[in-house]
Each structure stands twice: as C-alpha cells, then as structure tokens.
Image (cartoon, rainbow, N blue to C red; front, top):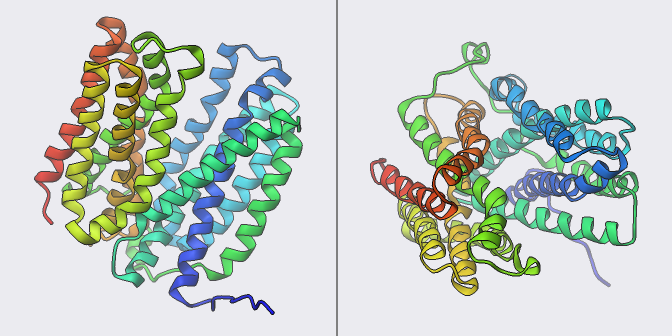
Length: 385
C-alpha cells in the first residue's frame, strides 16, 4: 500500500514547496493569458494598434504597484500580501477571459498587472526568507519553476486553441489549478516577520549605493530579456534569413536555456560564488550576441541565443537573493527597489533597440545589446563579496 507523505507545516522543505507553488502559479497564469491574446483580440475585433494600446494596461498596473508593494509587505507581511495578490491575480485572469468589451478588458488587465507584481515581490520576499532557513542560495530554482510553469502554460494554451476551447473555459481550468495550489501552499508560507514601527510608516525609501548597483545589473539584463522577446524573431527573419517556420527558433532556444540555467545556478553559486557566476553570465550574454551578429547563419545564431539565454537566466534571481539580505532596508522594500529599477530596462529596452536599428541597422543594435553583458561583468567586478 502506497502512503502519501505530507510535510509538516513548519518544516523548511514545506516552506520551500509552498513558495515554489507560488512561483509556478504566477508563471502559469501569466503565460496562459499571453497564449490567448490573439483569440481575445479576434473576439473583440480589435486592430493591431488598438490591441497594442490595450496591452499597455498591464505594465501601467505594474508601475502603479511599485511604490506600494514594499511598504505593504512591511506593513502586513509577505504571506498575507502573497495570498491576497494571488487570489486577485487568479480572479483577474477569469475576467480577462470573459471580458465582453474593450473597457472591461483594459480595467481587468490593469488589475492583472497590479496584482501580478504584488505577487511577484511578495513571493520573492518569501523566497529570500526560505533561503535564509537553508543557509545557501536557492533563489534561482524558484525562478526556474516560474519558467517551467510559463512553458507549461504556453503548451496548454496551444492545445486549448487546437481543440478549440474558449478563453473563458481555458482560464477556468487554469484558475482551478491555481486556486488548488494556493489553498495547499498558503498555510505553509512563512509568517510575517517583525518590522520596526518607524520602518512600517515609510512608503518610500531611498535605496543605498549597493542596492542601486544591484538594480543597475538587473536593469541591464532586463534590457536583454526584453530585446530577445521582441526582436529575436525579427533578427532571424531579416538578418539570418530563415524560413518562416524557423523564425521562432532563436527565442525558443533562449527561453529553454533560461529555464535550464535557473535550475543549475544555485549549485554553481555554492561551488564558485555569486560574483563569479554573475560575471560569467555577463560574458556569456556578450559572447552569444557577438556570435549571432558576426556569423548570421542558422546554427550559429541559434547557438548565440542559447548562450544569451544561459547568461541571462540566473542574473535577476541572484540579484534578488543578494538584495533581500540588505541590512539597510527590509527585504520587501529592497526587492521593490530592484523591481522598480529593473522594470525600466524591460519597458525602454526594446524601443531603444528599435531606435538604434532604425538609425543604423539591426546588426548594429544587437552589437550594442552585447555591451550590456560587458557592463554587467564590469559592474559586478566592482562589487564587494
């Protein structure tokens, strides 16, 4: 007879599993929404321009959450904020699938972005606290679960469209899975840690120099991630000149190695140290982009994207892990500061690459992008261990 082993509520492995469930939930909901954007656009009869405007609601919601996320986590604790934001995030996903009008879609997407970032910062705060229980780096593995969930959500979304299942039915299924994960994980999340009363009253905290440096590294890698998402397909189409069926190979290679790199990064940090891993990551990003630009053939370009994904994979998780140990501000406030700085890279990176490509060429813009890796390695080299 098979006996199921249930971890006790206060076991550190139980806390780790619960936090991992949050990351999986977040990635699953995010990719499920992304996979059905074309269907929802078609259902509401929106032009590409109109849909582009609608999609801006999510980053606007994210930006609105940035000033309050760290303060709210200090005030109520990451456990309570994670529970509230997860339920809101799942609920907004349902409204996105059922939205009968553009107005409701925009308002739901605004709250989807707001609650999604609250969940992001609160679950990363939980991860920092669980990491402290282990006494070693485990942050990257949590982000690996997010990547795995994102890949799973994309596959499920593809299958749902093939059947076909409406976005409403699809998101109800995803919602049921997400609610189950939340119900199982919430009792096993770490309780709120005590925060000084004077700190609780501070909604805005100026990050110290070390946090600014960490934020800069995160910003640089987010520029690369955003550019890969928006421009790698165009690079393969116009520069590598592949067939339409192969245009997505570069981004697929990038995302696959992103997930793989996150699952192996923690072990590398234990063996060679955080600083060397981050420096090596920056050099891999540069090497991959230079290879793709210098030899724009399908095998070398795919290998280049492979290296960029491997280099990008662990930078943000390791930066968050380091920031969460700040001695000047609480973990929640530190992570909110890093998120605020790095989000600018994701927001402005892709347009910047487009501007450079328009003024020169796409190959030149990718060479410019390769400098981000060198800047990462150089910035990390000046950091203290």
